[in-house]
Image (tube, rainbow, N blue to C red):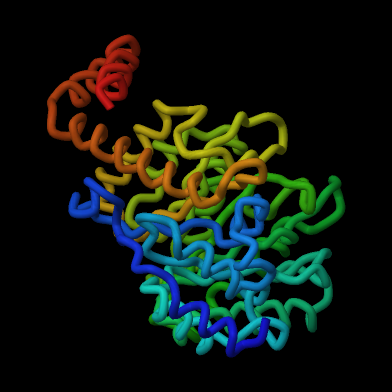
Length: 354
């Protein structure tokens, strides 16, 4: 498909309700929803043949724009840009045409950084990674958002004695300080992950370590993005982690998982750990979270459009349930008395009424 043909197809899309569909369109929900754009590659057998192929970020955006209730798009940099795709300016124009906005730009370092991005053993490669990170901030500026989320698949190690831990830590601190100072109007955040197939041990493997990093970076525009699945993989209770991070929580990525060793399942929000999902919403209310809600899920066998719409509905249900808890006095009594049975019954009660 030519660029002109793609542009023409953008204009043929029907207007899609934002902030909720049908009877919840005017529910005053306080957050904008985004969802993983790469999930639009899944279940192409469900796509109208006239819309095929679906193979470029522009195509993914077109499909994602049909999700009822979606308001923003998080792009990967440099993965979704460059000569083979489009410029940030072209992406912004496409967003405008389908009535969406950019939520954040998320780093996805190329595989040439397999030995590390900010942690690469060679100084010139570390410098290149930092420059790519700054380019992501430029893309965010053009797209009209002020968030850059840094998740590196490669900053870590696999074996004892493989790296000098303090050296790797200091490299990340210095790199973020440089980025924060170069772009003070950008909200920079680190998305930690404990382990995956690319890096068995990440330099920043937990919420506690990530908060220590933020403290050492010591910049007002540096914070964290927490991923529900990553927190579960790290053996954390997401509600507690959200409470610990507080006003340094710049972003939240919602999903669920079975938490088998080193597995990031990317399941639908609240599908496996409903009480933890409920408490996560409760803690977001408690800390007065100001960002947008992003679904980092992997619907390989599921219609990704319907999956995102289900996630939107479920989050709103959990959000309202958390509001009921916050409005009452029972949660305060339970916490004061460390009442385990009361805590379980409280969650059971509000979820049963959804």
